[in-house]
Length: 408
Image 1 (tube, rainbow, N blue to C red):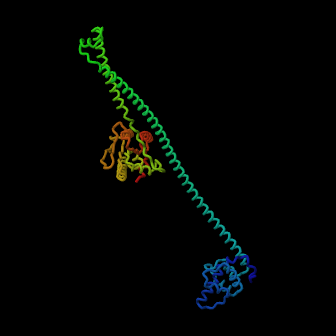
Image 2: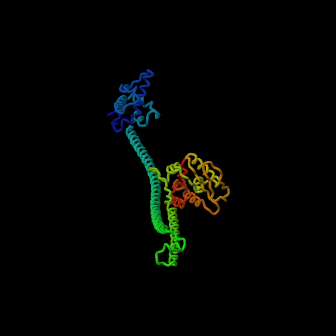
Image 3: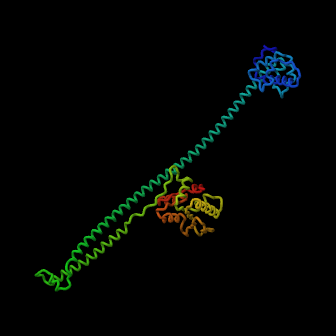
């Protein structure tokens, strides 16, 4: 028990500032070579950077045992160096322990409050981060779903196009077989007529009635011989006409069935590339295809805040740069040659077309897509659903506007 009575209710670490103050006083006195009576226990910690928690009890008991040293410390302890609990302990006035205990409890509660507040703030930050992550994941899920829907739509369109191609191929195959059967029948008729004609031509010629009489069988009247001769001449002429008709029909049949013009096949994208992505657009630009661009559809989407003239100018500059970078032929089609400011200015790497009066750019794009050799792929840049559906039926690859604008 200390001279002040039981003090075990005050934790040693609550007195750290006062104990460190005592050690600091001894250290400064040693530096100045000033003698000050103090407990010898403090000398061990004069050079220490920090007093360990385990040594606080020993130092506390040593200071409590030296009332004179403790009183000197109390006289020099100021709030800047020693906290309130430490000053109460050094002064050792009656009732100091109760006051120190209250301060200790208040400090503990404040520490708990600070800890709870810190935990609450940390939990709020974690909740905010989780909500942001959840929102980001929802947005990614929505985007992925939209991309999947587009891909499924592409697959459905491809399946319908394949079914239509199969039906068309079957129709062409039926027509080819019909034409082949017609050709065989015409050849058979021609061959039969030629055989009959050859047989008749082997009969000796009949130049006059006298010759006919000499060739006729005995007992046949000259008039009958003449009638037979005329009938044979008529039949030979008819056979010649039949041969010529059969030959002409055969020739027309062969000309009408040289083989069906193949349908254009859309370009197949690399595995994992979505048809509405910038990667798909860049791949198609490098494929050697003819690229048809729905001018105002792209320009108004890409530069909505500028005038119509500036929209056209921005679009043409972007397309010319893309044509140069990817070595691709580009045709951009605008509505209405009579629009103010519309003119097909000269561009080195792309062709600018304005639809004539009474004709929409959509129709011009369809005509251009249909007029290209089916062996050459065609790419059409537009967000117009009707154009997309039509050019897909022609075997062209549609590209969304935002996919083209994302290509650099």
